[in-house]
Length: 141
Ligand SMILES: [Zn+2]
Ligand SMILES: [Zn+2]
Image (cartoon, rainbow, N blue to C red; front, side, top):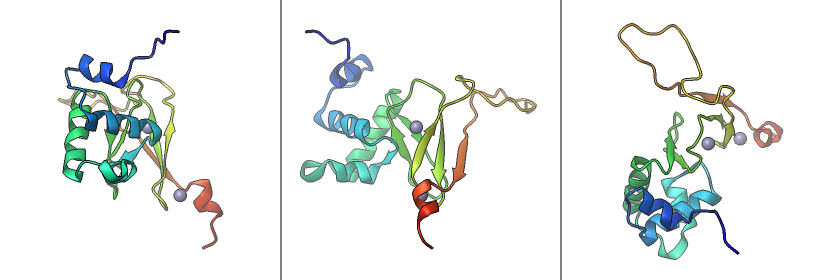
């Protein structure tokens, strides 16, 4: 039985990165916890987690290689995810910080076309929808 799925180690090597155990651990943690920040990824790795600084370095490498997407909601630490192959957006709960993917209606960046600022070529529109998630809406105040 063969699988067409590329392993994370192959993915790293194809991006010119060595497949270190730290990078593999972060990639697999991110697969299970999209939109996680560095601190919560580190917590998921348990006892043999690398230092927080090492986690930040790994995430920076993965981001530079295009293997993870990074976004930074206001008043929150940077979040990371492996869904890099589309132009999706995010909805963020302003009460608990929960993040949900929102498919892009257009599919390619920039999906918002406003008046072009003079002297500027727009490449992307960073959209964050702010609101309150169902759990927080249902929670007694
Ligand atoms: Zn919430
Ligand atoms: Zn996302």
